[in-house]
Length: 387
DNA sequence: AAACCGTGGAT
DNA sequence: TATCCAAGGTT
Image (cartoon, rainbow, N blue to C red):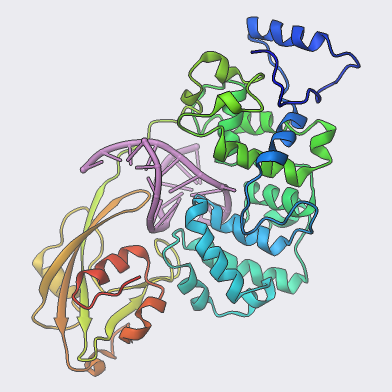
C-alpha cells in the first residue's frame, strides 16, 4: 500500500535520501498529518493520461489564446460534451478573435442558442471587440479579469494555460480535489476562500511553476477522470497518499454543499402563430435578464400561477381561434416553468406589423436565436422545427 | 451577499 | 421522477 511503482517519488522538499520516504508515509498513515501533494506526481500522471480536446494544443506546440479563451467561456458551468460541437462551429465560422469581433451580435446569439447562460454570448462578443481594439490578449490575471465575462477563475485559467502564469484556477474540479486532499468539511460556498488559499499551495513546487499550463490542465483532468463527484477512482489516483478524504474511507462526501432552496414553479402561455407559408411570428426578448436578447414566441409573463383567461387574451398577438397544441415543462436554474402552447393560423402577417415582433420564415427557423425552452414549444406543432 | 442566470446528461 | 452538477460571472 505504501509503494506505488507508477509514481516516481519526487516533489516537495526532496531530501537526497530515498529510504526515509516510506517511513514518512508510514507515519502519515497513522497520524492525520498533512502531506504536501507532489506536483511532480500529478504531472507524471498527466503526461500519461492527458485528455485530447479540440481546444488543447499538442504537447510542445504553441497555444492559441483565442482557443483557450473561447473554450473557457463555453465551459463555464457547462459540460465538455455539450461544448465540443459549439466550439467547433464557432472556430470554423470565427477562426480568430477579430472575426468574432466583426460579427453582428445576433449571429453570435444564434450560434450560441441552446448552450445556455446567454450573457456569456453577449460578453463574449463585447470581449472580442475589446481585445481587437487592444490589439491582442492581455497576458496577466488582472488584465484578463478586467474583460467582460472573465472572472477570477477564467482569468487564472487563461493566464496559466495560454501565458504560463503560475496561478491555480479554482473551478468545481479544483474545489473538489482540494476539499478532499485536506478533508475540508465546511460547506460550499462559504468555504471558497479557504479552498482558494489551499489551492494556491499546490503549485509551489518548482516542477509546477515551470509548467503552469500543464499543471492547470492536469488538475482539470484529475477532477474530470479520477477525483469525480461520485465513485472517485482513488485506486489509481496519483494523489491517493496525501489525500485526507481518502483516509476517511468516504471521499465522495467531499465537498459538502449547503442545502439549496426549492425551485418555485412558474406558469405561462405562448402563442404559435403561423401564416399560410408556415412562417412563425416571434419577438426579441429584452437585452438583459433571463434569455436576454434571445428570440421567443409572444406570450404572457411567467408567474407563480397559471394566467387567467383575460390575461391570456390580452397577451395574444392577434384575435384568433387559438387551439391548445400542448404543454411543455422546462427547468431553469432557479425556477421550473410550465408553458401552455396555443396555435393559430393567419393568411399574412401584415396586420401584425404594428406590433413588436417579426416573421420567421420556416426555412430560417433553425438559424434563429431560439433558446431551448422555445425550441420545445416549436416542436409541439405538426410543423415543428427539428434540431 | 445573495440572487440571478440555461441546459442536458448521468444516476 | 428527482436530484445533482458541469473548466462561473454579474449585479
